[in-house]
Image (tube, rainbow, N blue to C red; front, side, top):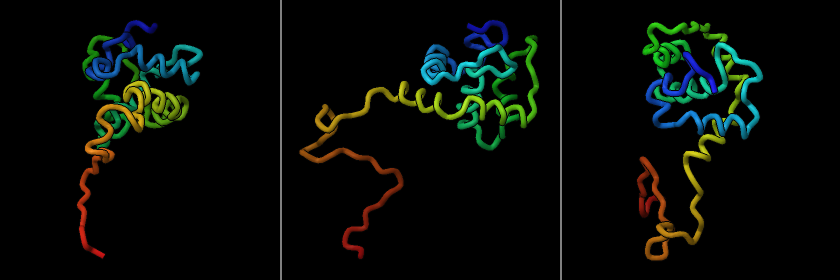
Length: 135
């Protein structure tokens, strides 16, 4: 387990929502844990991608500043946009897919509780309107 600036809890509120143990499990399951401790370890890159989804307008360097803004007094690297992009490519998408599977829980089955209402499959479509009789 990493300590110092990469210790659990030092990546902001995301570690409260997505525990570092879960990120580490996803990285281990997909064999994407870094082989040596880097300035941008795989765990940190996963949180960078998650934070990037929350702040898409900020770009990678801006998201990095948001992630590390509360680490005053600790030695924090200032990676270039290119280094952040390279780290994202190194980790890839497999750990994020695995993390999604861990977070969403088991998929619904065709006959489980809450799947059907009065014999009909329950579905939600955001922003969709039915136009009965249109044709």
